[in-house]
Image (cartoon, one colour):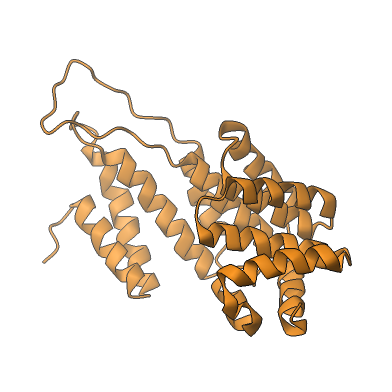
Length: 239
């Protein structure tokens, strides 16, 4: 039985429902947690705002999955405009209070992807540039901006960003994403020598890349129309 007004309980159940793909139930629970979290303001040792912002972010991502794009833009903008909590240093908390970890960068990135879904690449670029300004080592931000430049047919700028992202990649999966992106932009520019070079490096990480659309869906590139078509064409032609 759910404890009435327990924001954390609603948040946890929403996470479970999301995992089970019960998106509408998850939205209801995230909405309840968002309603109840501000009532925890009176507890000086509460870290309610961390989870409060996370609930907005999670709900926005579900709305985006359901292609209800206006709603996540509202949620993400709420996070971006949210003021940090005021710290009361006169209060000693036990256990020690968690540090506030703002989700503004994640909100800008997710909002940029939604603008990209709406073919508003100029606004998507503006959002991701704020992230880069605040965090010049953010690999995901360079990759995202490169994707938007690709869709806007600004291929030289896309190459610059994908190259920066590749150099900043810390995992094999992130390297794979950036290698695919570099191969695709060179393929689009008909520089097949460089396209083949990067595609070959990508194959070393993911040999199943030749499966084309199947692996493309897993890489979350399929909703960027131009890049998706190019990657599919590359894999179909087996560079």
